[in-house]
Image 1 (cartoon, one colour):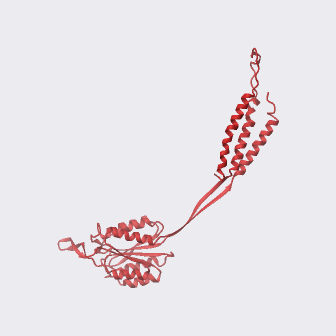
Image 2 (cartoon, one colour):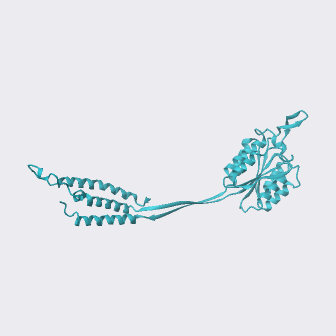
Image 3 (spheres, helix red, strand yellow):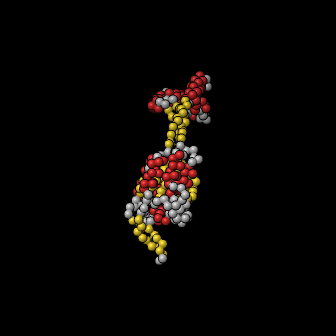
Length: 327
């Protein structure tokens, strides 16, 4: 409960001098008699009305307090918040080819990509997010879901070797588009991360990009890897050895895919750069939130007024009847 005019509640302080005046007047109006002995009054006890002689004053004080509360206009308040949230449908397309084990990002490109993608998923609480992995082939690791705990578990399980090696960028993008084409969301996005050039699959990258454009799907492409050479584990007759291998990213094709679909191409040369890429995409693809605060007020002074009126009537009735004369 709140008061529309709370400043009037300060009038309650006036009850303090009123009570003090009553006590002072009562002490001055007490009758006194000088008697040689009080033996004649032994055994007499004051009647019940004597104890109740202060009741009219107490009723008056209570009624005045209630009238002041009525003047302050008490109100009940019901407040709630209406929120409309429109999420974005996002598919993360992640390259899991052998070159993703290069260690120019720490501990390697694949692990860094998984870590930063997990951070991105955690920040997108209201979105449907799916996961597609591709190398020489492509498949859906997780369909579109708002159960991000399941998504994060499946993302964490991704390792090199789960599918045939290679880099089928077009096939990975086509699989992602297939996951989004039936979506009813007004905003559908693919974030495709790779560190190489298309060398596998039956679908050309630009063909898949044209398919994405026909469905109104934006594609953000991310080329991950430093410039020049990168330390990469390579199978040799003597076992796996680290060798510096050239970083070969088809940036032109990735840029063309982004431009065709209304997205953007990014280059990430280290883990911090990759994190910055996802942060930029996060800012560009904000979901719509419409918040409306609704407050409903209802006047509740009537019960206080009725009680005050009842107390006044009871006081008048007592003063003119039962407590008119006090023995």
